[in-house]
Image (cartoon, rainbow, N blue to C red; front, side):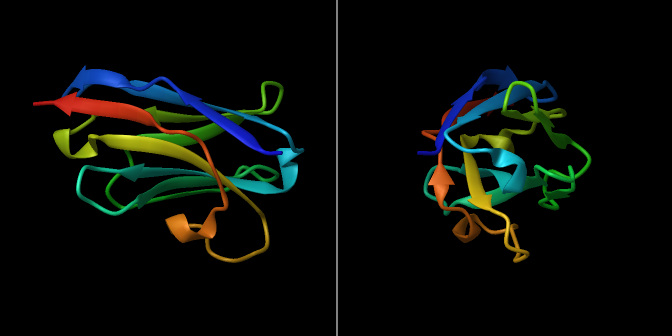
Length: 125
């Protein structure tokens, strides 16, 4: 059974940085796409970033491009989201998500079928 456990959220001032971690277990993830999705209060879930584990190929939402970086550590089976130059509008619960790669699009929350419990990120102005 796939398990995704996020950590690293917290409170940070605008302009600051945070690194989120997602520890993945229960599968060999080399054939998976890993994603980060966020949900702000009163809003729908929003795609943030995705990484294809086998190739390292990445994709980002326009709102985070150039500020956020998704990466993986094969030895630790962990995916990271490095968030720099944070803005108050980045405040949300951030979820790690996964889906087996099938060649379709992964830049929408609906693409993913495994989810972590989420970690809160709050950016103060």
